[in-house]
Length: 50
Image 1 (cartoon, rainbow, N blue to C red):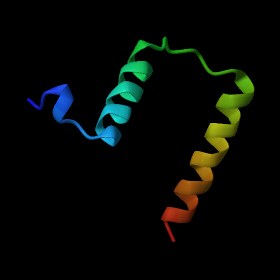
Image 2 (cartoon, helix red, strand yellow):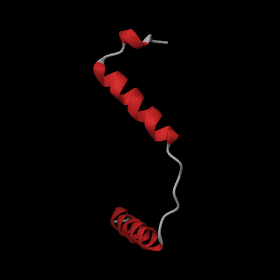
Image 3 (cartoon, rainbow, N blue to C red):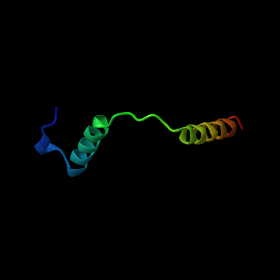
Image 4 (cartoon, rainbow, N blue to C red):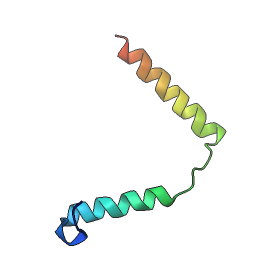
């Protein structure tokens, strides 16, 4: 494993960001967000079949 002092600034930033993301609790989507994601997914699926 790479020691922290051997990591580049970008590596340290990525590690810090990943640590921050893992600490966040999952929040349920609102009905509006769920509908929007469903619409986008349906559109993407439709486009990928072409």
